[in-house]
Amino acid sequence: MNTKLDEAFRFQQHALNILSRRQDVLAANIANADTPGYLARDIDFSQQLKSAMASPAAVKSAVSLSLTADRHIAAQSTNFNDDSLLYRIPDQPSADGNSVDMDRERVNFADNALKYQSSLTFLGADIKKMMTVLSQG
Image 1 (tube, rainbow, N blue to C red):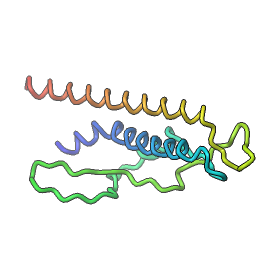
Image 2 (cartoon, helix red, strand yellow):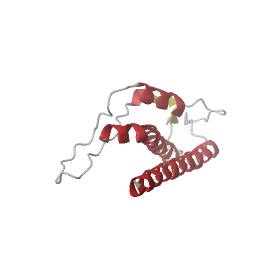
Image 3 (cartoon, helix red, strand yellow):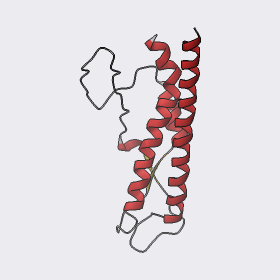
């Protein structure tokens, strides 16, 4: 049963992990908007999601938690290496070498937050559907 639940939530799990990591990257870009020589980074969401869904192996956890009861669910997180981050090509390079465009970063940050919230909403709806089926069965 656990395997079927894992498979049912796999897409949303990967999507939420990648969106969360992207939010961190975009926040770092915004935080370093005035840092000379800082190069803005981003994640290719669709490519990362395709590669995450293509790997049949379970998510390797960077976090190690001990379970204190039989009914606890093991926590999992996705490892992201900096090789998956892309450098953004600036539309208008600055004199100090910083490639952060605050307008673009704000739009991407808000868009990513909206996608994250939507993904949580979809996941919640899936859980409610399963709970309805279980309570009627």
